[in-house]
Image 1 (spheres, one colour):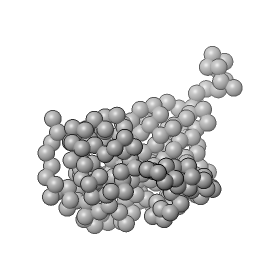
Image 2 (tube, rainbow, N blue to C red):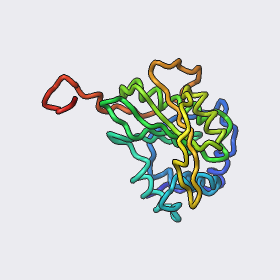
Image 3 (cartoon, rainbow, N blue to C red):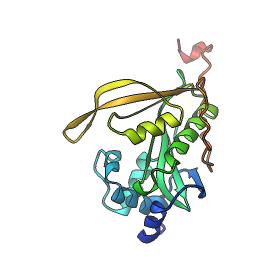
Amino acid sequence: MCRVVSQDKVQHICECDTAGVDAHLRPWVADDAPALANAMRTSPDLAAQFPGGVPSTELDFVSYMAQHLVSGTAKHDLAIIVDGIAVGNVGLSNIEHVHQTGWAYYWLAKGARGRGLATRGLATIADLAFTELGLFRLELGHRTGNAASCRVASRAGFRPEGIERQKLRYGKQRFDVETHARLTLDPVPDIELIPRTASLAGPRQPDLTRPDLGLA
């Protein structure tokens, strides 16, 4: 059963100044459905997070979280929590332990943007990927016209590497994507990480000296 959160409270959290407030990362739970619904309602640009269409009911949002905002062997998602309310997400996907690579991504509700939460969240998920999952290289991408996302990536230590022409399609329009990457060898940005209440502990790189794994 989902906990009922008033829309007034969710709206207040999304519009408050997040500088210096108590933010942390944790896995998504069913009780976050009202906050996720509010984020979609107040941030139309997040519709791209729902390629199959934005859920219409709270139960649909719960189902979406159970299917997509999860943590497993090849994917991790953590909610960005401010005053108990989920205002965004940071995650890793396409985690590959042979070559030690992964894909990072992030989003924030409109009212929580511009105060450093996305940058701190991205820096935190990168730190977890390197220290807990043993990854070596993380990649991410954003539409070339999304200057805010570019700033988040750059400030979190992800260097631009090139343009992938017309990689994404939203509706009938295609978009060029700028790719960024961060390596464990790169300088660590001077950014305050967001505390988290969960570990990303997962399988490490296989022992390549074992012939029974069939790896070359």
